[in-house]
Amino acid sequence: MEKEITTGKDGKPSLLGMFWSPGEQLEKIRENPRIWGALGIIVLLYIIGSTILASNITAEDLVVSGTISLADAEQILGFTKTITVVSVFIVALVGILISAVIQLIIVKIAGKNVTFKQIFSMNTYIALIGAVGMLLNTLIQISIGGDTSIYVTSLGSLFNSDSTVLASFEVFSIWTLILTAIGLHKVGQLSKTASSLIAVIFFVISLGFALFGGVLEGIAGL
Image 1 (tube, helix red, strand yellow):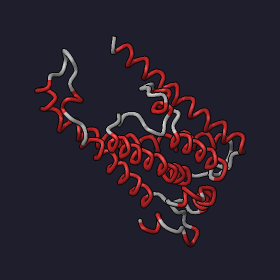
Image 2 (tube, helix red, strand yellow; image 1 turned 120 degrees about the vertical axis):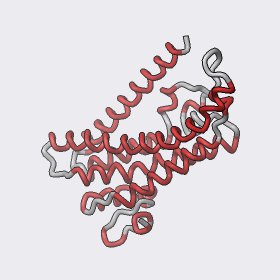
Image 3 (cartoon, one colour; image 1 turned 135 degrees about the vertical axis):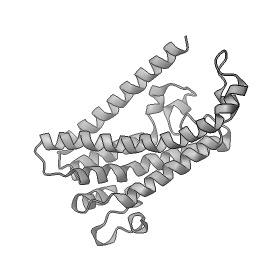
């Protein structure tokens, strides 16, 4: 696992290299896709971040007027914390898998000679950005007593809004979007234009889900 983090010698991609030389690492992933070491580190980062997040949930946070009393909230607090920890990294892993499957279908339709291992490895390494973003934002919000559901690196924080759409415009998310476009070009062998277009489409779809989720929350709050 240590070799996955450090220098990327002997043609092996470096996980930390995704920060300062992502293009080089993605080219190495094309030639020498690696999964398990990097995936283990990603899972560990999400577990640490979600554990910190869960440890700061209080019974008062779970109280819903007319539905959940403080006494009820105290009874489900432990379960809620456990679900928070588990759900965060499971959602992250499922996201990596689904993205890899969809992207593989696209590159196969385009007639490119790419394997699932290459695409899955690409998405795993790119996921480092999101994992670090989640951990960093959680630590910052807890240290300043802010709302951990809003990333300080998002437009939601800038405009002091809980809008799920504004929350989608976030530094680490956009960084991930850019790396996905580069990855589809270097690993998926698609043209730069096609790679960028696909990455943008993925982002627009995520915005659509965020908007839909915001509408549902509004209806539920009526």
